[in-house]
Image (cartoon, rainbow, N blue to C red; front, top):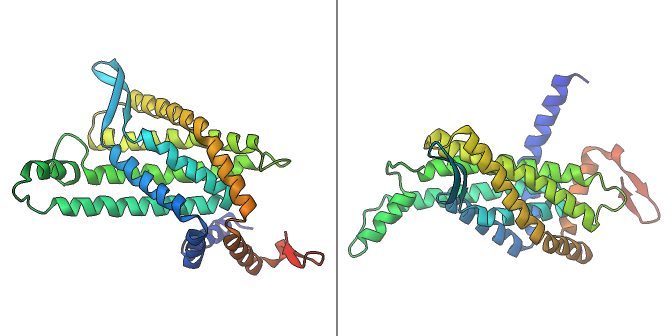
Length: 285
């Protein structure tokens, strides 16, 4: 097949998949609500906390080689949930959850910025001024909320997609025991270190190099690498919880309706990939 035709088919398939709103509905119904809620909460809090640099060290010409933002304390939770979703529902489902998180985060930041436009009223002018500085559009040395929003959204979506793809691809290595602890831990650790490095680098580059013009390239590398290692530590510590959640969902049949829907869509699109098993009375790959 012509390469251009392959790209065209892939592009059309991707658009159909992304705008399949019934798939969105089935997926969000299938993922336990508490998990989605915690994921969204962690995403918003992580990106808001990224406004503050909580530690800097190893200075070179008065510029820190390593800096850590407040977002690091919750970024591991976001990536752990994506690892769980990738393992249970697949790479595409994790990408959709990432897009949802980015959308809700954007709405939250825009909403806060609009509130900051209202004038302060007595007796809370001081507190209101602090709020306006944090979430408004006033010019200051630090990146403004809309700049943080753009930086965090781009970094978040790209790193989330990379994390989901690497997690899914790496999981295929463990063909003999894909549901074992070793498979889950390895795919989680590898995808986390790459995903977090990309997330930290892109966010730092946009927020503190492009907009604030504060960080240099060596600092961006230091931020990305040290941040990724710290987040990997959290992942190693909490991944046993993620593994137990995956096993529990598997034993309880969590997501069955979504899996059945995806299989039905695949069968309609390309019946040649399936054959009918008379013993179980089902179509199987």
